[in-house]
Image (cartoon, rainbow, N blue to C red; front, side):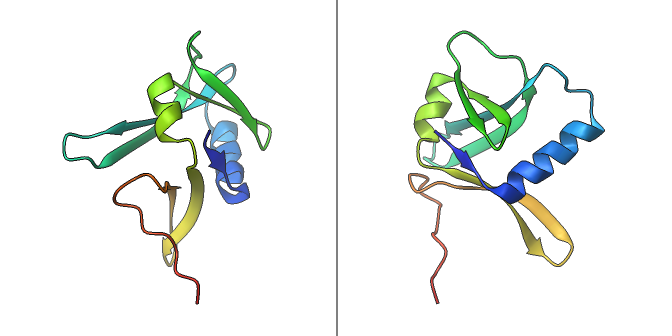
Length: 104
């Protein structure tokens, strides 16, 4: 299932401190749109019996079976897109719009 970077985990933990999410898990979701593109989502939620649970960086991540399949080799990262603008991004090699970073 999805892996998360240390930067993403640290930001998620910071958000947990600032919100009332006790007893909730971090739900990661993915779906395929009609045009084949992927759409991602995340938020704090309860777990369902069909969910996959993964412990990463002392965070419990949950996802439904469809999302688990789409996120199999994905990585959630927290990066600076432009100076002062940080965002969560999904690096997913099966997403048709994903471009791997260029080594240089």
